[in-house]
Length: 231
Image 1 (cartoon, rainbow, N blue to C red):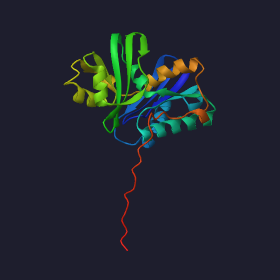
Image 2 (image 1 turned 30 degrees about the horizontal axis):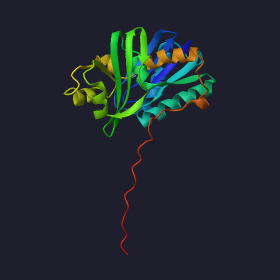
Image 3 (image 1 turned 90 degrees about the vertical axis):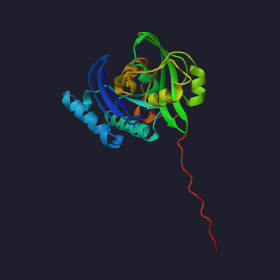
Image 4 (image 1 turned 90 degrees about the horizontal axis):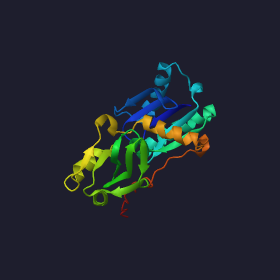
């Protein structure tokens, strides 16, 4: 099954083309440009470089959240448009779980974190033992001090765009934290593709109309300041 997968939940963006478990090509950018400018051109360039067209794709996948509200909307809208235009199935994947997919080892505790602002992170714990990845909690928004209390002195590998933040803030009270290697630390479309293959093979694909983002919390909308009118 050929899957075109997208990751746009944070500052970086990536696109991956897979055929079952084989990576055909992957593109990654962390250049500061908005995903609305980079995501589709990346996909077009990747497909052209592999001598593939959009008609060769069997399904589309997206990291549907949690993450940046704008990034998620752009990514989900992109996949919805491609799935609708080609009448192909699509699937939304947990951003946090997709990051854990790229970390391998025996008896590893993985703490996936994304900066949620306002003193919070989007977070989930996973356990890796060889090829087996076990989810230990649901995706959630949690304050850093609460997360520190849960981690304590356990050994954890930090993954995600919030990894540096958590390491800097929590290492004085959580001495066994480790940062994942930088090339594995940030979200990638390959992690999305791995989960998408499992989900699609289990009949979890949806049509374009059913795909939606998973925000975890409502977006913050600044309220306009009230102006006092003097008559």
